[in-house]
Image (cartoon, rainbow, N blue to C red):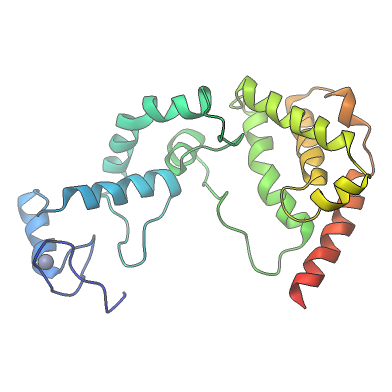
Length: 220
Ligand SMILES: [Zn+2]
């Protein structure tokens, strides 16, 4: 627990105990079922839990139990589904709220966290691409998402091996990764894939070499 953290109720300066509240306010909430003050803060933590799968330090799990979390998710589900079914321009293929992964997919959300600090390039790729493969295999990828993955790979393949690729292909999200992602998603879909990138067979090894060198440079 963070010793400097204070109760969120206005004018209450007692140290934090749980769910944002001090001991007495926490007990009051448990006893009466009514949240003392600052509902919006608790609700924003709940939203963060649903979207990201975690809250700020010291807040802890902001629901009474998983049944309450599931109800909160069901209330927002239709609205949030629009975000990946009819995406804004900024939306990334495969993005789903943590609660979707938990209650619909039945597997954890992990897009935001690397497995460790000393991961290999292959682990990093698996970590990013495996959830997309899973979505593809299970029929959860929207058509626009498949198209976007293929389009990005086709663009990457067109400049693969050129000086512009050598600039853009280094580091996470580079051209090599886009091509590998599309190839693996196509395999997961049981489809042959797009002509424009499917024959870029050197993508993986070349990209990994470039990336390994980049990581080694960062570590110095
Ligand atoms: Zn308090």
